[in-house]
Length: 204
View 1 (cartoon, rainbow, N blue to C red):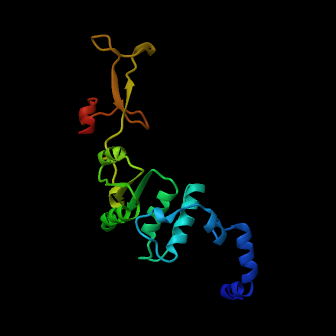
View 2: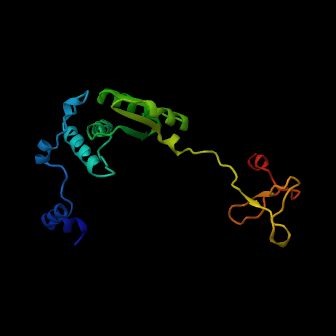
């Protein structure tokens, strides 16, 4: 018996087991008692979007993560923005494909009353977005931008130079001499002439 035939033959038992193990958080009864007023939104959800918004908002209030799965063009962006607002979130980060950044901004502004929206491209932009204020603020970032990080710089740690008899080497002013070393093996960072590197030379 193949898998399709097995599922077809035992579908009632499988369905009952799934529902028992994973009871639905949102159903027809919950729709009337969840307390989310979709009339607060600036645009009216269509068809099943209303139930999806309520269910997502309810899930966001009870779980740290929620997935909305639907076909392209169904309105997942609308559902996400509206659910975050109704669930009581104050700051929302949106990471989306580059060609949808401005579409997300328009969608949020057309859906969520009083929403403050900012597009961020740098860490400085993220810091400035903290002052957006408002009932809820959205920060929208291209996923390609989000993949970028700080530039790489050589790593090093400063270590004191040992001297004779277990003491530490000191310069003419009596200060302990320190050199830059590899943070893994602690070998001194030297140039081609075996002269210790300074910080400026190390990161150049």
